[in-house]
Image (tube, rainbow, N blue to C red; front, side, top):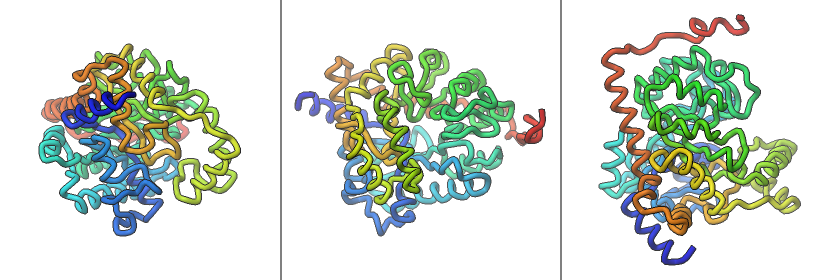
Length: 401
């Protein structure tokens, strides 16, 4: 990319900054510092240990960030709920610590207001329905605390939904899973279909009355990984009105990186680390493996290939960006941290994407979808009461035929 393209990209991002669908800084801060914002000053450069800090968010042209209030899939029951509450508490503490740079946001109007004030809108998304412990009341509580999307599953199946990276059991959504989607619609909480199986995607699109999102997923036709979106699902987004936010995770965008990651995760387990651990000791094990078995390196161009394909299938009105920074050990060259978004925009300018289309990708599509969820929820709440259904009522007792 030329310096002229990069200058144009930075100028575009001043007018239409990035709404990023997924950043795992809260979980990284839990691991690195027990959420201690005195121990890790996010107003200073933290590039030695994190992908994200406020300096680099500004350099990257980020205008709104969905912070993932993720907890690991092996956190079950009330443990998952409590850990999710701790994640939410951290996001609120972060925005309270930096009111000059961050604004807690719950609505599309809040996002627009933050942009007008020169602050980064801070939203929250729960990554995995295990966070609600099969309780619709808990789902409502998370919404009241500010969570504005929920990824239906993480890497493991739930009793009511199949994950992309687990053996199918439900064949998509169960009756209770469908009720979760309906209750999310009534609340105005976006249904996030990253991480779910293709059948769960299709079931959710059948049930939902509101646009959905994929907070951090790319195109399966370009990289055949189960975490990516099949073309038939991408093609269904225009009728639904939703958006697919392309991710930067190397194993989801580059086939050779997917194969390398399987071996790297086995190495992590052999050294006693969870595969998603990014603490210094875990990263030392990662880098030692990398030195012996050099990893295939994705690039900005690799990610742009996904966006080109997703645009061809779903259309420009149904695309966004969800980097997954601080949720992975490695990233594409040129997208090494949150300051890298201008490099992607410059690459797309070089591929003859118009500035109007790029503004949809970075800003307008995501804001529109959140506003659509809010508008639909206002209508639904006029006629639909909060659901008090239980998983036992709809799906039967565990093990029941």
